[in-house]
Length: 245
Image (cartoon, rainbow, N blue to C red):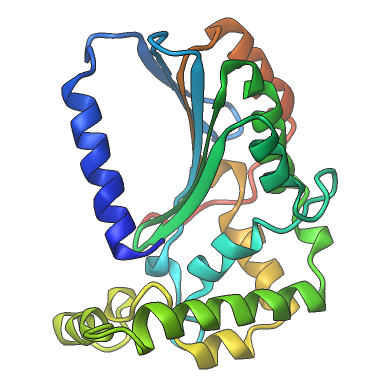
């Protein structure tokens, strides 16, 4: 997600919170497999938002493997074992909903906003790409997404006035080798060098259920939502300890 989109999203969130009843029904819990779940009930409109944040951003990367978190954001919009290529986006569109994703230094987030009766399908699709994505990744798909990210960097950084300012500032602010010293989009050479095994390793290390927070907000039945979360995410085992940031 580009910087101006982040600013817009944060501004919109701040404005929305001003009009919210902050004493409304919100609670959170951590499941036995490590998944953090947050429910926020707001029945003012018949819509529901689902967001899942994986606690991996450019801060988890290493020299020579920069840009992986952002690249993975793109990869997860491909297919998973039970949701065919392009169908994630098509399914949300068919509901009249919207979706997006974003990556920053400390995390990667995916979110969907749909009519309330679409909640179960969204939870199922999110669980499918959490648990059943990596076996669908092909060399062709990997190379296609490399080109997409390269074009994004050319448009938003290389060919944009002052596009490199952020990267220059980060390099000046942090010591060499520190994961905050490079931009989220990373190095195109590092991206070009990425292999299928690199992608599998990154997914297995950082995209586990025990490194994620799931948020459901809006108009929904909490008991039913809890049952769906258990049904679709409860089967996943933790993928090992996640090193604290």
